[in-house]
Figure 1 (cartoon, rainbow, N blue to C red):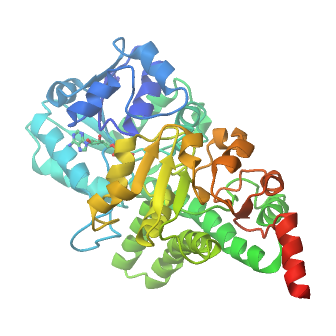
Figure 2: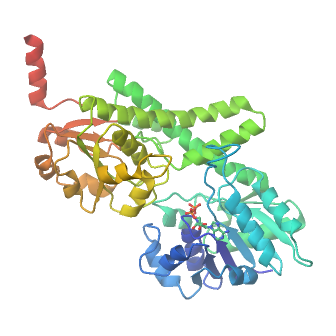
Length: 478
Ligand code: ADP
C-alpha cells in the first residue's frame, strides 16, 4: 500500500498544524482533517484559524482546497483514507478512578470506535495524541473486536513533539520523528509507510523507529524530563531570592556545562502543558506498583505548584498583604508566548488567587479571546460564582488601557510586545506606589525602577527605587 489519502481525527493544536505541514510537504497526498466540532472546522475553513501559530496561516492558505481539507464529514474521510491519525484531546480525568491524574481516554476510544464502525478496507491507524503507555493496545482491542471481514489494522505510535508557539518550525525542522509499531512483518511495513511520508522532508537518520511501548513512553519521558529541568531551576530561584544570587546568572553558569546545556533553564512563574503528561506518568507508575518512581515525578509537579503559589503570595504580600478593593492588571493570559492556548496557564492561578482575595482584575493578552478568559475563570474548578468573576474581571484589547488606575501589574506571559511597551506612559496612569511583578523575567528591571516602579521578579532580589531606599535609611536612623 502506498499512502495516498490521510485522514486526521481531531483538528486541534496537534492535528491542525501537523497535517498542514504534511500537506505542504507531500503535495501528492490528500490530507483531510476532521472534527466533531462544526464551529472548529468552520474556523479552519475561514480567514481566522482557530489556533494561532506563527507561519500556520500561510501554509493553510497555500494548501487548503488543493490537498488539504477541513471537514465534518468524518465518514467519507475515514472510508477513503489509507492512514488515519488520531489527534484527539486527552484531558486529565475529572471524575472517577485516577481523577485529577489519569488521562481521560474517552476521546481516543471514541475515535477508535468510529474508525471500526466506518472502515471497509485496511487502515494504518496512527496514535498521535499523548497517551499512556500501552494505549495502542487498547485501540487495537477496540478495532479488532469490531473488525469487519477482510479489514485489517496496523496501529502505530507516532507522538508529536512540537511545542506550541513554534509548532511549524518544530514540524519542519524536527529534531527527530519517532515511530513505534509491532515488530511483525506487517508492523514493519506500516512503519515504513509512515516513514515514507516524513521522508518527504525529514532526513532518514532523524526518523527513529522503535517498538510501540518505547515510543509511547518516550513522549511522556521527554516531557517529564523537560519539566524536571524547569522545576529544578525554579526550585533554585527560591534559593536565589533568599541568598542574593541571581537565577539567570546561575542558569547561564550551569548551562555552559555541555553535559547540561543551556536550553530550558529559564526560571519563571511556573505552569506548563507538561503537567498533564507528568501526572499521567505518575499515575502509570502507581498502577505498576512503582511508588518510589511515582513519588519522584510527583515532586516535579509539586515544585511547579509551589512556584505558582510562591509568586502569587509575593504579589499579595507586597501590596501590604491585601488586594481587596485594589485593581491588578494581568499582562498575558496564554500559557506562553506566540500561542492563544490557555490550558494550564499560570495566569489562571494568579487570577484565581487575586479574585479570592477580593481584587478587581484587568486582563490583556494579544492572542487570547475574551470569551476564553471568561470561560477559564468561570470554570467550576476555578470559581464558585461566575457572576462574581464577570463583575470583577474586565478584558482589554489594549495594554495601556488595561493598566489605567491599577495598583499593580502582574506579567504572566513572555509576549515580545511587553518588552517594548512605554512604561513611562503606563507608570503615569497607574495608582501609586505602582508595582510591577515580572513573572517571566523579560523586562528591563533597572529601567522600571528608574521610572519609579516597585519591581519584583523571580529568582532575584531587586533594589527598591533610590527615594524609597533613602526613606528606608532615614527611618532606620530615626
Ligand atoms: P490537542 O492539543 O491534543 O491537539 P485539542 O483539544 O486542541 O487537543 O484538539 C482535539 C480535537 O479533537 C478537538 O477539536 C475535538 O473536538 C476533537 N475530537 C475529539 N474526539 C473526536 C472524535 N471522535 N472525532 C472527531 N474529532 C474529535
